[in-house]
Image (cartoon, rainbow, N blue to C red; front, side):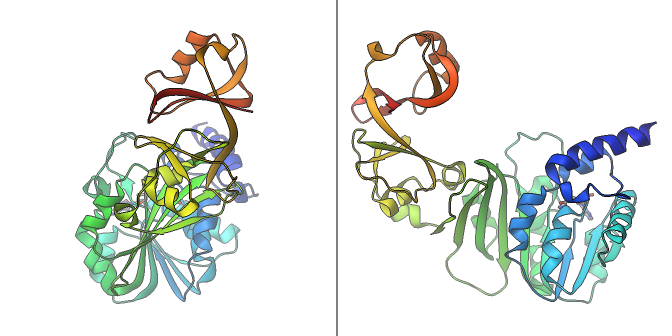
Length: 346
Ligand SMILES: C[S@@+](CC[C@H](N)C(=O)[O-])C[C@H]1O[C@@H](n2cnc3c(N)ncnc32)[C@H](O)[C@@H]1O
């Protein structure tokens, strides 16, 4: 019975997360391994970046990342400490007609015995505890990247590591001197992964990419540290208001985007931007707006309510003004340099 339930749950998760596995003969692992695996969409994005001869995933898990990321490689190795899980992956890869070497070992033991070199090593460490909301350090992950980074770099040209969106980018750069690229990957404006790339060659500046998949927005690229030298000009709302997407906000490049797109910011702590001319390639939402007074907000009107750098939360605003949620229009409660303001889409 338990086995049947596991397979039904697996199929349900697969419909959303990895539809490529909805095939005759595929076996699904227990819930935790399903939760820990990447989605097909983010895996596909990563697969487009990587290419080479030899690929190894040292934390295979259910192998979603490995399946996609290894597509452009000739020799593929999967390491996983959980033997039941690896058996399932091996079975599924046979069904999918994909070849790989499957190694059931703790990766630390594998690394001690290994004499091979690779073009790419991939890791998607597991959390040591189940507290998903904790802002964590690399030491809280299994494996501990800090302990093995030198070893990894000694046997591979590039090491790619997937991390939680909660990780602090400055912290990462301070503890991992070999980082040369950071990708902040969102799917429909929900930041899913921070992916870092390490190399033993000193590649100089760190390139960062803010990616928002399935949004129609193009990737925004900047150099790590650019924010320190960037400046914003401030102004009251003009014809257009720009709300940066969440991968930009995660990157903390509030002044960089102001400079790059020639936009004025509303306030040092309000990450909203404005201009009279529409800048179409801005990575985020663009609204044509007007400033409104308290009294111009009619009860029972319908808005998507946004609160940014404003004392009340959307729920409280909704109550106070008797508004309805949703619809096509937006109302933003925020602060400019002059104080509290309300802008509404026209
Ligand atoms: C987050 S999951 C990987 C999910 C995978 N990227 C996917 O897309 O399906 C992490 C996996 O790493 C394995 N793992 C953690 N520490 C390990 C270690 N020291 N040696 C080998 N495997 C390890 C866990 O058993 C778990 O299955």
